[in-house]
Image 1 (cartoon, rainbow, N blue to C red):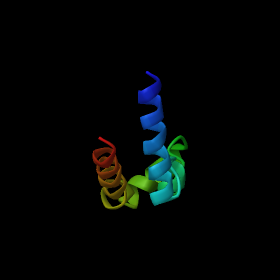
Image 2: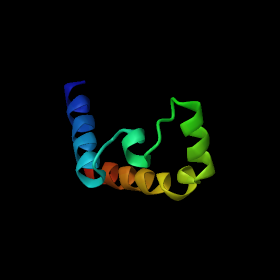
Image 3: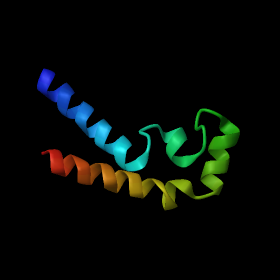
Image 4: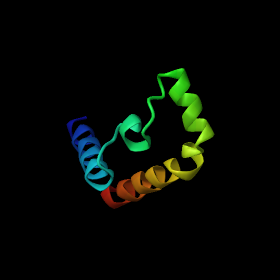
Length: 66
């Protein structure tokens, strides 16, 4: 368990170093808890044009760690 937590923390630190944050609202510029901002995020196509870069980056970092 301790090893798993340590590796997960390492993944988060590397993700933050690469992208500046691990919080969606910081990464995409919208607060998804706010219905108005969530709708604006959908309209701006952020989930299609921006989020895939973060998912791909996280997968690459995870691959490095494994």
